[in-house]
Image (cartoon, rainbow, N blue to C red; front, side):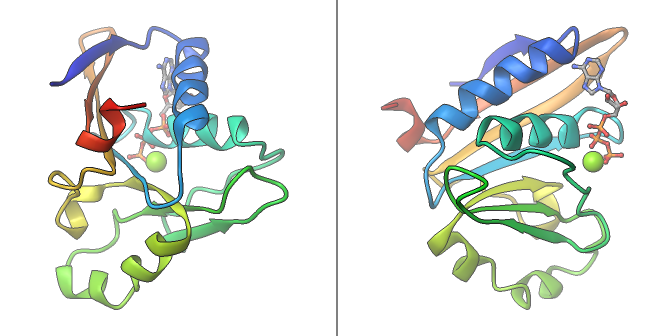
Length: 147
Ligand SMILES: Nc1ncnc2c1ncn2[C@@H]1O[C@H](COP(=O)(O)OP(=O)(O)OP(=O)(O)O)[C@@H](O)[C@H]1O
Ligand SMILES: [Mg+2]
């Protein structure tokens, strides 16, 4: 069942990022969808900070994948931005399954690789701007309900 959270400011994003980072495990995907400027990268950065990462988090829009490894983070994490993928066959060449076997993943523009909607390890978050309000629709996969 989806829940809705208001994200009126960056502190609220930080708290959501902290809650996600505490529960995150290898094999998970946090799928961040939403329009340009909705706050996907901001939430991804908050999660990474709460996993222990200090310093910059480059946007992976050009590299597509950025990998973070312990000890600077609590667990291996791949930060992906699939915005530039326009052909689903390009996704096959990235080896996403191999990455997911050994790391947690934060995926921006998940719809460009077919989405993760039926994955029980997926936490789907849809960010939107409704007038002045910023809203997160959060849909936990089955595995997340136990946490
Ligand atoms: N909940 C929020 N409250 C206030 N400002 C926010 C919030 N979320 C994001 N922002 C601000 O909105 C701007 C755009 O955010 P961000 O770059 O994270 O969006 P994005 O969804 O990754 O966009 P793109 O699709 O272009 O990569 C940033 O300046 C960020 O600081
Ligand atoms: Mg972004």
